[in-house]
Image 1 (cartoon, rainbow, N blue to C red):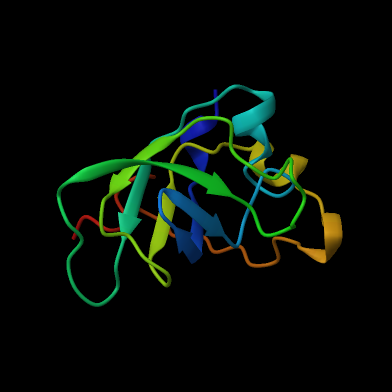
Image 2: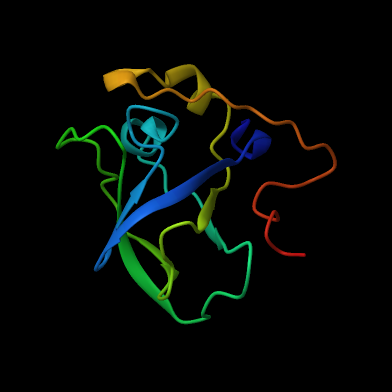
Length: 125
């Protein structure tokens, strides 16, 4: 009902082959992907330059070093995504904030309201 209420912006901190390590994970605001079996739309954003149009499947890992901090589905993202790029996870809804924790000292602490924007359109200017 409120899935389109919010997007989550997370940064790629490390890339190893088809594995991306993010500053957000399933113990944070990505928990509903696991517990709600969601497959939200993802959009990669590069602040300086263009990303490739060629897509590739990636596994997403969170920052906690816990072996369970991995998103159970692969997501298609640009093949040349790298450290420092951003990912907008659209349609995370209201529960993404309510279910997040500060497990292993990682916490979601920055929230920004952008009025007049639809989730999933951040990098499409």
